[in-house]
Length: 263
Figure 1 (spheres, rainbow, N blue to C red):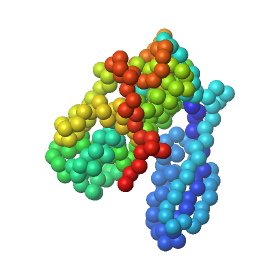
Figure 2: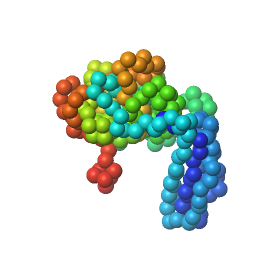
Figure 3: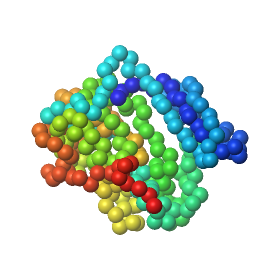
């Protein structure tokens, strides 16, 4: 909604036999991620549970600005994204296909000495590309600054892409009462996505449009605003309803927590 992150509260349920090393690693992770945006762990609660359960509440400061909601898109405006799209979905596909080993390393760059993980299939540059995708699935890297940055630029509607671009933009289209028209040629397909698609016989655009968990930002801006990097214009707002790709309504959606299930 365009707020600057300030603090998180953590609710933690865990078995009695959880090791202190595991807890130290967990709290280090919270501390390090909060440090990226100048926030802190302000409190929370701990209770005993048969399984590990984590609930996180994040707080932010709008600095007097109005929140950027899903309902502000208007015809004539443009749709733009900031951050990676399709990488996490491609990484998951590689894992599910058994194209990577189980010991892919994930962690902050400083902890990895430049390594993105080990891939079984391939070597050299291809190995590095596929490892980047697996790492994107296992450790998302949101472009946090783009949220409040978009608000300051004048975004009229915004959300993060967690369940798939088509599905999440569908929320903006519904809340704003508009049609979103996407240009499939506007999405760059880098070498990592291209190589993963070749290896799995997949269409990289499918990952970009329907894959979630990259936590990129999608926002709507007035057409006269000059958007800086990393914002990329991918479509426009028109009269009507739903999300359209290359002129056709697209209902493929993405992940729906109340309809999808994993067996």
